[in-house]
Length: 155
Image (cartoon, rainbow, N blue to C red; front, side):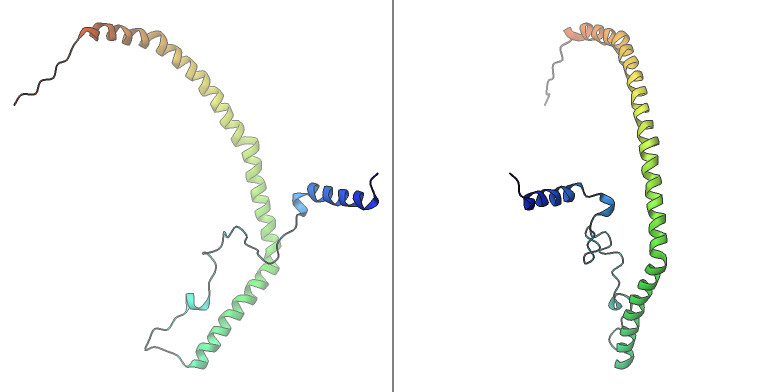
């Protein structure tokens, strides 16, 4: 006989298995797990602004420039993503849904249709080759089968 705890464990395991992809847990720490933006948008102060030896600003200006760049980049990204993140995500979702729809309902059936048609043409082509070319080349092979080639090296 199964206990209530066993049934609870079974139900929670089943819920984990049946979890819908639309409600899957997302990682709030590692937001680029496939590292698609690893080298593209990682821009730091040192990547943009650099003073060569012999041309240095005041230390206070340099520190304040660093802080201004870092903080403004951080907050500008935050504000832009807060304002435009959801609408842009909606647009990208719509775009990829349209691409998927076209691929599923148009591209793959069209390719399949072309493959079916090309198989038909291939059979006709193969039949023509077997009917006309095979006997011709077989006859040529019999004609030239008695030809012997001897190579001699003259010094």
